[in-house]
Length: 394
Image (cartoon, rainbow, N blue to C red; front, side, top):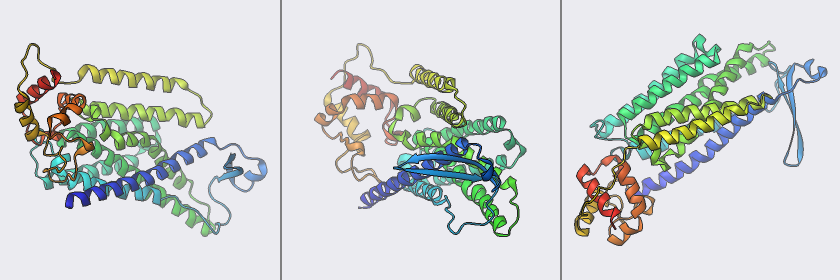
């Protein structure tokens, strides 16, 4: 009953997380596009303090958008704020992290071949990892480095590479990726809570008092918003990465993640420039070539256990005994492994027919070492080789 309850919580918060994430990222993309697309307004608008305007058509109507250099002469009655998209995305993400990776720490977070941790030790490390990563960013963004976009970007990327490596040393492969994502998501939500919202409140307060707003508030808020914009594509990848074990279970999974963070951020730069009227397709071409090179690197360096030559496979009964002891605790109609209410991905391996049905996928995940998950059932190298040889000869 507990496992079923956890699955429903997982479903609810994952669904909620995706919905709010779409809203947040959509708003981020829209406002960066809007800011980069503003045009020089006519003089009568400039006289009112408007710094840029834009005309658009959507949904069967025309829209006229104007952005003030600092603030309007009088605060409007209804002022729309954009914050809860960020807050709810972060809150649901943290809830999901706890449900999947902390409640299920033994299955999803701990890899005893890296560190022999108790669940609470792993959870403590996970929380410290997120808090520490966010704290370093907050310190960096308040230094003079923030005034030089290229240097700050390089510094932040270097720090993220370090986090990718460190997470790989501490957690299971899948847990490492999700904790890097948790740091990025916390940085983005923190930019809203600690940077963008206070700056916007200061602007509103100045207008209400009839004072000229300090332009540094708006500039700092825009800077943090821009940082969030470049971090969105890496974060989206990490959100879906659990579906692609070829990335996080790779021998150099932390390098793969670092490369994807750079490539996706670099590709995002093309669109930000395009919105400002700078068309540089070479950026996308280079990003595509880097992605192809990454795929080649992954294929060349992939550490897989291949079928042995001229080897007589073990008997069906012996192979099924290994699968029963190492795989079927999770992959069963009624799993005996705590935290599982049903067979993951609907793959049950309790009979020879079921194994034959999933043979191709089973060979792939056994060769790569992805399964058993974090090798929590302690499959030996000999057993892995025996199962691969047996499956390859069926």
